[in-house]
Length: 137
Image 1: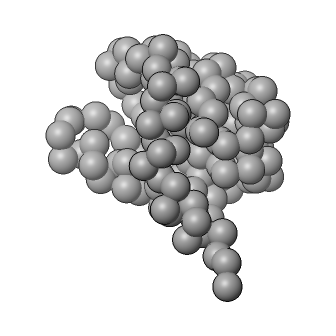
Image 2: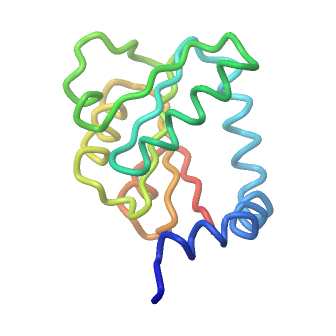
């Protein structure tokens, strides 16, 4: 029996290497941006939000960054977001088409928040609409 999730887990080391190689300059750009902003939002739905929580927890162990995690729905309707260029929103979606996450990306763009999308679908809406797209390999 073949399980897609298991296969993807086993491909992670190779996928990370390929992504770092192909997206190095973009990741450097995001690293510099993270240093300049006051607030970082991590947004995802389903298994992608689990990644957001893991990233938040890892960064909290090594930095004093102001980081919050939201589901796409929560981010979209949140009235207390820090708007403007002093904020960064990073959106994760395997397909790049998750409705709530995509709506939140569009809302962040409206608010003037710098947006980064991470997806493994290079032709997805999230990759096309983010200010800074990162395509996983």
